[in-house]
Length: 110
Image (cartoon, rainbow, N blue to C red; front, side, top):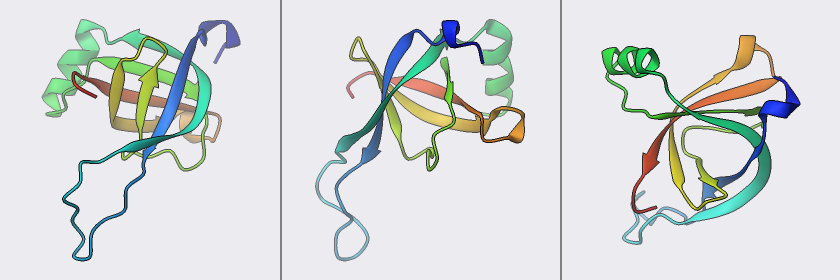
């Protein structure tokens, strides 16, 4: 990935409240900032949206960033303008630990 394309500051956030005694929690899920990284954030093209729909995945944004060990679909991303992105798909670029590409859906209420 070319560094010049990574012009967006993105906070990687992880769920921070523990599960209750029986695996559930009555509290809403809260998130804590893990790290802030530079990333390329772009809307999906019509062709990408069509492919995602064929796989029954709702998504609207692609976020490319340097590889971050431990990043999973349980994490979410917060953009500098306050928008929250839920990760619905995650892949390592060329299957090496160099870059992540996250397929995301914008969450309206955070």
